[in-house]
Amino acid sequence: MKCSLSQKNLDMLTQYCIGNTEQFEQKDEDYKNIVLSWMSDVNSSSVRELITLNYLKYEKLEKKHGADGFDPINQRYKEVKPRSIFEGKIASSGNFNDMTLNLIERKKDFDVICSLFFQNRLVYIVEFPFSRIEEKIKVPVNKATLGRRIVSTFTYKDYDCDDLRIHYYDRELVGSSKCLSKKHIEMLSRRSENGCSVA
Image (cartoon, rainbow, N blue to C red):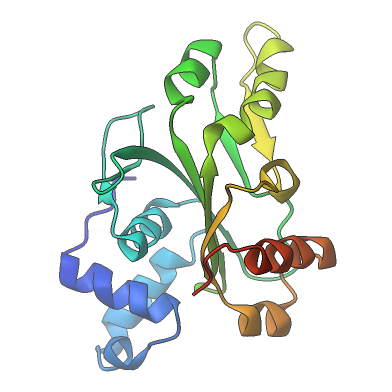
């Protein structure tokens, strides 16, 4: 589903997701209920993708099977993989649907952005080169059976690398929600200490 929001509303929702709720709470109840229901739909990632790109100040792109966003400063294309959970721990960091070797080749110079939302609050945003997970994404493509849909998944273990960028990480929310495994938390903490930027 295509997601259309004014920049004003997108900025407000971005702030809401990082805990600055004052402006959102001033809206009428019908508005809040509609927006929260929309954001709570785990099968629709459009609004979470927009919030992720907006937080990073990247441009949104619309082309199907192309990049989701673009960094006008570094001139890099971005693939966004937002996840949303409301209880428990995140099982995987993201997936690519209907992949082919040609699509993988087109994405080889992209960066991948993973964001996690817990009960509509932003937990983290991380970014890394697609090349870090390229071989993992190729595995189900190379093993594909004709006529079956190809889904390539990856986890934080696949992008535990020196060029990982941690744009946002809410340690307090991670502690209270228990939405990450101990090893996932250890990786983020270790990479943060090694010079990755953390909000």
